[in-house]
View 1 (cartoon, rainbow, N blue to C red):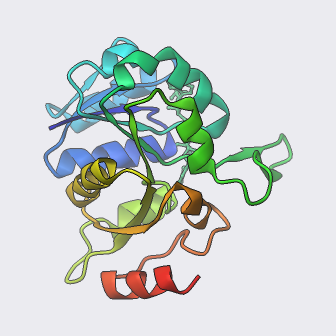
View 2 (view 1 turned 90 degrees about the vertical axis):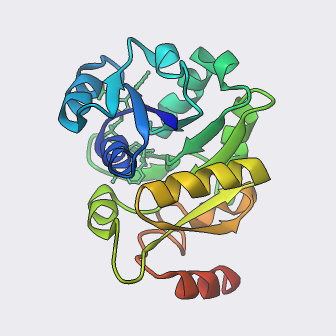
Length: 211
Ligand SMILES: NC(=O)c1ccc[n+]([C@@H]2O[C@H](COP(=O)([O-])OP(=O)(O)OC[C@H]3O[C@@H](n4cnc5c(N)ncnc54)[C@H](OP(=O)(O)O)[C@@H]3O)[C@@H](O)[C@H]2O)c1
């Protein structure tokens, strides 16, 4: 199947490599498309650099928006129509970093980023918050873990989006475990109790119930 990856920086590039190594066909785009072209060239035949963000969605079953939270709403506005009927996967943490490296949350405490992003999407798009639960380095080193696969947690309110994101998580070399609905997405973020964990399925399921 084909997935668009919009944003080919720190996390988008490792997600793309993981999906491609599991057999997914990719259409990539980024702000100036240079990083998308370089990533596509590095991946080889499984990936192409699209002309722009809308072109990335042509023929794609799903899209991963691997973007900083501050640009997400604008990009969703740019590509809104073709998102109807597609799985939309968002790994973004609602954070910003100032010139001194200080990190702050862009949403009020307790407000779920998943519910905010869902409000920006057109009706008919299926949202899953996923693929942002580990740092890029940890994601790379935990992929295809053996003998027991490492878990990637996800959150969604939509059963079809859940099935779609589970397939993508397995394709990338992880075992999917649902953390809850979009209201629970804070658990997956930086600072959340399920963030940056490398655990197997049994431990993951016990952690879900333990919040
Ligand atoms: N890096 C991690 O370890 C990590 C782990 C988990 C979650 N996350 C989350 O994932 C999100 C992305 O983080 P990141 O580290 O990957 O950021 P990043 O390295 O800055 O990459 C951002 C990507 O977004 C692209 N972009 C910016 N504006 C765009 C636009 N209008 N249209 C298309 N593409 C656009 C950039 O394009 P160019 O390449 O052309 O500049 C770049 O490829 C953040 O919310 C972060 O919290 C990151």
